[in-house]
Image (tube, rainbow, N blue to C red; front, side, top):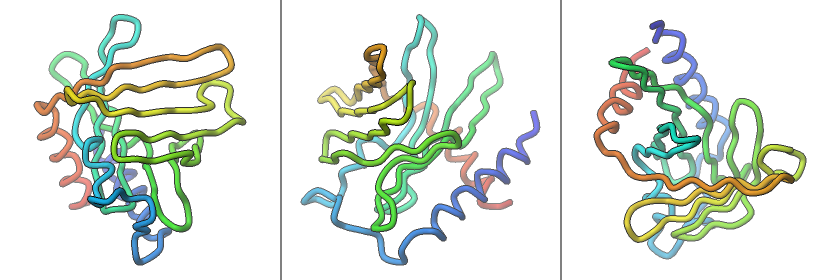
Length: 169
């Protein structure tokens, strides 16, 4: 597997996200403890059509959290940067390679994003639950898709190695 192009892309994406932001992170979207996104950080497993899927979130600073897609095929694990949740005075929302969602609301247990121009995901809501799961609701004109995401710490070292290697590139 050619990891070098993926690592280079990740380093460029994170660098662009960081450079495009204000020097001082916006604190306006933080809760009283200043940590509304800490529950989202880490590696997660969900199920779709009876098949598992994996993702991870890595907090860069109080304004940027990068999202990774993790593909596990037999003994091989691939980590790919998927987008970033940005909470700055310049932009508040989620940017992926294919779309952008604006922040609708943020609390210490819930993040809601919206983009009424999309047909596949007009609104995305992430809600943290007490048992360290989080629920995803993806709303579109045809209905709502729900995922229960379970924390899987055993994937954290794989993601951390990927990030460390990307920084060395």
